Amino acid sequence: MSIRLGYQMPNFSNTSSVRELFPAVIAQAREAERAGFDAAFVMDHFYQLPLIGEPEEPMLEAYSALSGLATATERIQLSALVTGNTYRNPALLAKTVTTLDVVSGGRAVLGIGAGWFELEHQQYGFEFGTFTERFERLDEALRIITPMLRGQRSTFDGKWYHTENAMNEPRIRDDLPILLGGGGEKKTFGMAARFADHLNIICNASELPRKLDALHQRCAEADRDPATLETSFLALAIVDEDGDRARKTQADMLSRLGIDLSTLSEAERRATVADRQFAGTPDEVAEQIRDRVLGHGIDGVIVNLIANGHEPGVIEQTGRALRPLLD
Image (cartoon, rainbow, N blue to C red):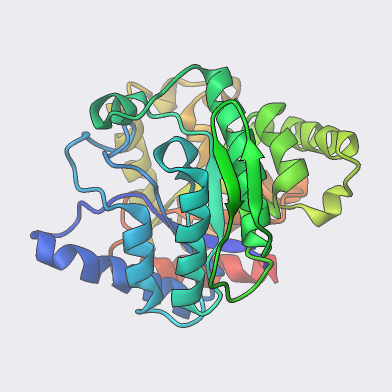
């Protein structure tokens, strides 16, 4: 497994009817595949996220959508970025992602995190619990899921979960990759060092040196060579052949969040969500990602083309600019 270049779909709100929705999702995944992306990701949410739109905007269930994409693509890896652990029994999740792997011919990745969107838990009836409890549950879940993905039976009696000789058949392989996503320097990074093949780091770009230092500490504590844990950064990219138009789109998006880039110092900008954004032409965005992300030693990037990824050609332009940085 290697995910040097990934594409995450941030929303499903850009079609005029529900019947057109999934064909548009397929079109994005196929364009990402043609453009040389290693993996396509959907979010594992039931409502749209607060910084993107309103809760009632369209949101597909992740694994149903990924199974549909498996039959519509040939080479690209498929994953949730990331599965909310609190939404599924861990043994069932192991079965679900393994079935996706069988359906896709060995292209599934288990992306997983602790869960965080309280409104979904409240309205769907899932227990939310405290921050500490959610990470206790993730730790237990990974102790169940990991052996089940590796062809072993799982027996586990924990505070949150219980399995008894749980089987997971059929499997197409015994090395289905595990990706953890998040920015927590102690809990998330510690679990990544113990369980994961890949860590997708979610943070402001200026925080990356500190994050990597923390990750190396967690790897040392787990007696793991950090070179064996692949890393990526989640980048919010606004890409347009007209760079000024891309920057205006970014300014408009930030303005809706109460952020005026024109009034901020560089230090102030780094403290906002703008530090996770990369705006301009495809080549300008590639240069920014090279300097602000890859230059720190991150292995790869997963891009979220929030403004216009659904428009034909944008994913391909982005992939063509970024791929040479990652080969």
